[in-house]
Amino acid sequence: MGEAEEVWRKETVPRVMVIVSMSLRQRDVFSLLLVSPWCYRSLLAQSTLWKALDLREMNKVGEKLISALSLPRYCGIKDINLEFAQDIGDGHLVHVTTKFSGSLQCLEYLNLNGCQRITDAGVQAVAYACPKLKAFSIYWNVRITDTSVKHLVKFCKDITTLNLSGCKNISDQSLYLIAENFKALDELNLTRCIKLTDVGLRRILVNCLHLRSLNLYALSSFTDNAYRELSSLKHLRFLDLCGAQNLTDGGLSHISACKDLISLNLTWCVLVTDVGMVAIAEGCRSLELLSLFGIVGVTDNCLENLSVSCSRTLTTLDVNGCVGIKRRTRGELLRLFPNLLCLKVHS
Image (cartoon, rainbow, N blue to C red; front, side, top):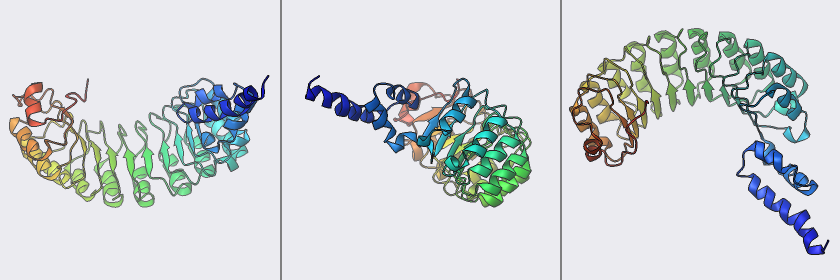
């Protein structure tokens, strides 16, 4: 083997693999480790590659998590994604947080979405071992309770993104804890947390004033008594109120104070009329996405008012089922909103 070929094999190829690895999924990077001993060493030397661990939708994730965290390269890991890892349970989390607690001290992002075997005990282990968590997501888990939130607020003081979507055993007690301890919260998802009431939501809205994203999808029990406090959220950009059956034009008038709002989902907000939408048009002049799906109380007048303020910004508009809006063909909507790209939010 010539000297040039040797340089190519030992130096050039590994450098190319390092460059390529930056744009690959982590599971593909694992394959590159097997190309050659030189690629293996070059890739291991790139510490940024091993700050994240993506095991989402894999099989035997519990075993793989334990195996990965036992490797020196994952010391100081910042991001772990276990989304829809059906087999992972409390035992795995207790094991890794006990045996590899040093490696988890810098963990900032943890995704446990769809990990339905995890209970409060697993969350407690995570919270205790990961004090620097900034984002915690545990969508679609009906086993955790307010106890999990108690652990999070006790040990993880820096959380700014919290996803409790589908955690149906979460109550107002959790909202009180969040409001008092996570005042710098940036994103909150409470989709289908059906035990929540106006009292808990109001506590969030008057304390977490830095919220930019709030998801209240499929929560029909809230009323304007809580929605009026949305006017306090001056930085709010994303708001999902799909299915807010008690939201009236009065509540919308308060939401119109959220001047930075770019995404507003009002699907099936059946009490809304042109009056409330005119207020939105006058206050929220940067809207990019708006869904009015299924609202029969709005008419062409609401779109005309919106076109005055949002004609250049709106790119997604869903007025399907809005029988009061007569001029809603694609061409008619494009005349009002020339930058529209999408006419359907809900399929």
